Length: 119
Image (cartoon, rainbow, N blue to C red):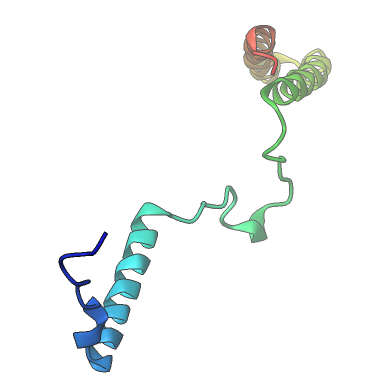
């Protein structure tokens, strides 16, 4: 079957080299702008690493974090309890107040550990 109409001319035939270079620059600039706004780079969790001595691995799961928190609170509770019974007067009251805050925090951590969803 014969084609009735001829093929249209290529669009690039009539574009000068200068116009082509300008179009490429505009396309590159548009791509950079879209990438800047639509593909932001991930932010670091610790932006200032010079002041950080201890870091927590971001891959550690919630259950492990809560278990360690609970153990740390139990250790703090034992230390402040031992100290409180060696003190007298208002210093003892302060130590017992700290002990109570630690105990409540330990209860909260243990409850969170009980309900954490294990993956």
